[in-house]
Length: 316
Image 1: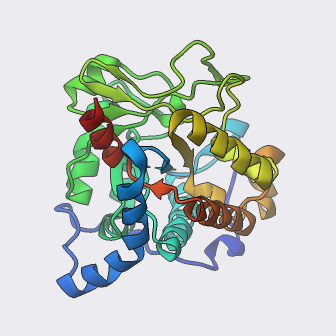
Image 2 (image 1 turned 90 degrees about the vertical axis):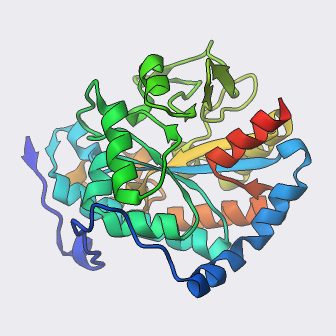
């Protein structure tokens, strides 16, 4: 195993990772909250105007400690992984705030406990907080329950959704017994070495009382339109495929990770494949920003997963 240390470049933008209070963040003052809500008015109006809850975009971020180098034989500590992810999450929140849109953050227990200040900002800026296991690198059988307890304790909010690390299978019984209302742990595509889901449902469905919300893939060919697609597809093609999904399904689900917004290209010691580090950091910030603006110009509404769940249940 190669021991990886972050260089000076990783420390040029420092964000304190404090243990913080265990009781959850304080509520914003009314004046600050009112000032913050103004950028969301256009998004809220688009949501109200969307016919039957259609034309909705569910933007999400798997907010985890950076551990991808470990998949390539690089020894990477939790502290180092958190430093990368905190910087990336801060960049994401800045983009969302500038565009006045909300998203859903699927947070690991590790991230929540190590970065309570970031959790407080996610909550304060109107985004939904959901669960993403406890330790992203070493999932355990009871993580569904433990992650809910940790994330709710740190954030001070009741959590309704779950996504398994790496979109791996998770016990349906555990999801239901833990009290989750929706599960987004399915990428219904064929990705060599990762997923073989060509016969699973492509759009949302109910499994007992739990709504299953797969990541979006294109109709028929099931082209995956998650984070790697925005990194590597021409932007015009990515947007065209997203619009195809919206016309066909009436909504679009995608996800990214904070570490994608870190300067991966300048860290060869991470041993990251080209398709992952291609268009990372500033290039990905610009791509995501342009994507959000294009969808808003189309009149699409950016909504949280729970808003989507509530809208679909009302329409049934």
